[in-house]
Length: 342
Ligand SMILES: [Zn+2]
Ligand SMILES: [Zn+2]
Image (tube, helix red, strand yellow):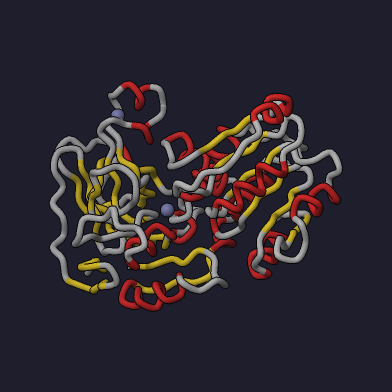
């Protein structure tokens, strides 16, 4: 069975044949898959770079059900975590470690490169062997489905923005990816860790998961509030919200030397920078998208060692047969990560 998107707004549960693995490919029996906002946008037709019919869902964990010829590192029965962004491993960018820039990239169920394979809101999904990681037994299938977003949080905050122990951090927007950024910042030894979010539910969760302060930007000026807590201003600001207003808020929050990460926005609105002011601030703008095998490996290690308890961001679980309930819930504000169990 699979949830097949036949048309925008038309998601149907259908029987689909089990995929056949070709050379170097594996078929995974999906146990859990995170529900990402990009999946919701495809289902609702908010994002239309989708070739229909499609199967979305790109945050899966499961068990190897079949292997194609030439597969050498995984056997039927192995529990695995799938990196949804497939790559060749041989092009220049892959060899530099930037597999998310791969010239031959594909994605299973996700947004991004043109080559999209059927995703994981299904009992079975096919992918290439090099996208698999062995799932440590101590990590549940549900938590394992958080690996990809957690790896994105690690890549943005630690690899790209190089967060150091003791630094003061602001995270703007604490939906599930923002919360994972908070948990990574806490694990990395952030000093003051301030979150900015208009939702009381989101602020409560952030405080529970390691934030030291929470600011409601609809009640007070968020820049004043942040400088009230840290008069010297933040060392790091990361925008994990999406709207251009969040990016503009981040720009206003900079002080000398602040590193700021354009992490959440994926749409094409413009924002202004004062050239001379930016010059004399000597700050650094970073950005980060997608994931890499390095980031996936680090995310698995964060969970395996208990530095990040990914179960904490899961608010709801649904069997695949109830996916329409999950779709409705995705449109509601008071939720964190929703897990589908095919
Ligand atoms: Zn996603
Ligand atoms: Zn490549």
